[in-house]
Image 1 (cartoon, one colour):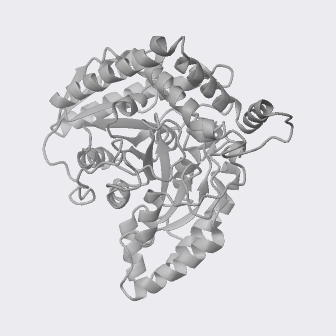
Image 2 (tube, rainbow, N blue to C red):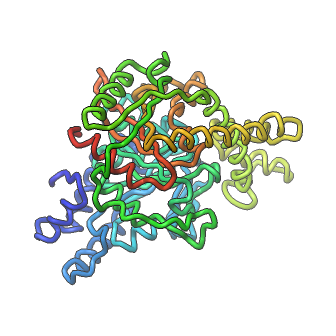
Length: 476
């Protein structure tokens, strides 16, 4: 079957009866089976997806199908789907079935998208390689000996390897954008509050966002238009008007664009990634855009601020998984204290335990002001400094990652090195602004390179426009 790049192409062929939704589902199911070694999916809804496809094929005959008819999508194992398992890729929730459907998933289903399965991820979204999963690691389809990126590695690889057209992932500090860069896909982290978090297992509530993986800007824009908007079930969701993101994706003007000189001067950024950034700066200038170098003096504080605050929030959020309220209950207990300790020690992986301990430490009475309070103040400064740049410039461009996908197991000896994979992505998360990673080439080892673009809050439409401009000559 044709490897479709756009939902528009699928829907054209559906109207011409060149393909059916059932045939599309069967095709993707076969691709999933053929690529089982990548370990992108932890559960495939085979019979259910086929049944959904038949219903939508009938709707198409009656000309009553929704705007996402023919779109096959997967969901990260942190996003709830009623009467289906959701585990956060953790042993602590092994076998747990959700009683609710996430708003983002429901809105896609309401427009006749077809959900094909549940996708692997780092445990509770904590990781940058998808090696911290109770279901095993995810392999990069570009090179099976390299990581997929994390934490939404399964969601990224599923799109990369054509197991589905679109995936819903989650992004707390780069967990959509970083794996998108590693896999050569498009990954959007929208403005915080743009998409409802109802039905998302919490990691760090003031950072968590649902994001979108796609092969094209058009599909990403169409999905965002469907799932964005106020949700009464989520008090943090924004009432900001949902734009017609898909309409008129051409740049509306010549933009003013900033890039950070630190990205070109840092020894930690690979040569091929620096060269890619330089070539895209030249490309934008040739298109008539005004591109200027700026310095972001707070860059060195962004990563520690992020990790102090997110581990603190994780410590609180994950306290509910205690063997009593939710999750795994240890059989090796003789009192309440041992029930808590053993259930959590057996259920949580090492990385999750590490972050819970860090978060508990920074929230402790002796260190609360020294760490958590200071990190909150730093977050405010980072947000204000980022917004100040974006008052003068339409966009900030920066590499999505300092390196391309590293080899599986390479970073295990030093967790701090793994955390550095998030160096460039956490700024947008700390500031709450939208950011997108787009594929802009490959390195000398044929591993994908991603370029990240940040914009003002709720400026996703402009973000799509400049991304499409940069992608127009790129062949995936």
